[in-house]
Length: 207
Image (cartoon, rainbow, N blue to C red; front, side, top):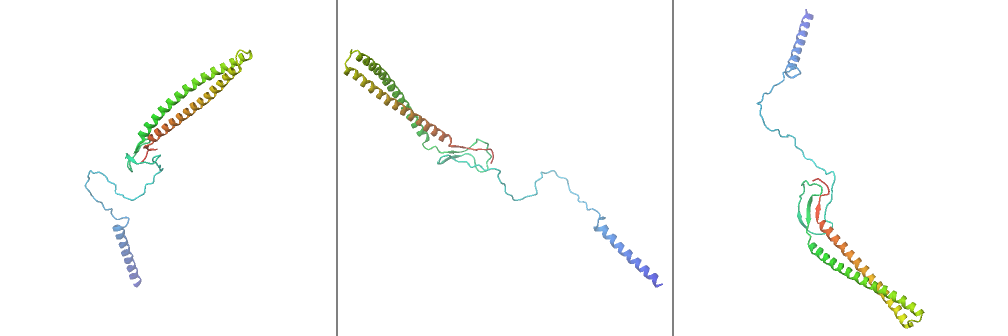
C-alpha cells in the first residue's frame, strides 16, 4: 500500500514539473507568441541615424606658391574649394613689373639702333679696307717698275694697315652691341615670364 502511494506522489510531482516547464516554454521560450506592433504608415524623408567623427586624409598634396617674393593681390580660391587643373587660385601683386618691362623694351630699341649703326660703320670701314688693300697692291706693283716712289708705296701700306685695324675695331664693337642686345632680349623674356608666373594656377584638380 505504501509503495502505491509513493508511485502516485512521484507521478504527481513529475506532472507538476512538466506543467511548469510547458508553461515557461509557452510564455518566454521558442513557443512563446511573437508580439506584433501596429504603426501608422507615413510618407517622409529618410534621414541617416548613424553619426560619427573621422579624419579625411588626402591622397596627394601639392605645394603651390609664387616663384619670386611678393604680396598677394587677390585670392581667388579659398581653403576647401574644388578647383580644376590650370585654374587660377591666386594673383600676386606685380608692383613695378609693367614699368620694368616698358623700360627694358625701350632699352632694346636703343640697343637695336646701336647695332644698326655699328653695322653701318663696320660696312663702311670694310669698304675702305678693301680699297686700301687694292691701292697698296697697286702701288707695290708700280714700285717694282719705279713708277712711284718708295715713300708713296709705304704710305699706301700704312693706309692699308690703318683701315684693317679700324675694321677689326668696328667688327668687335658690332659683336659687342649684338651680344648686349641679346642679353637685353633675354632679360625682357625673363621679366615677361616672371609676370606670367604672378598668376598661381592649380597643378591638378582637387580640393
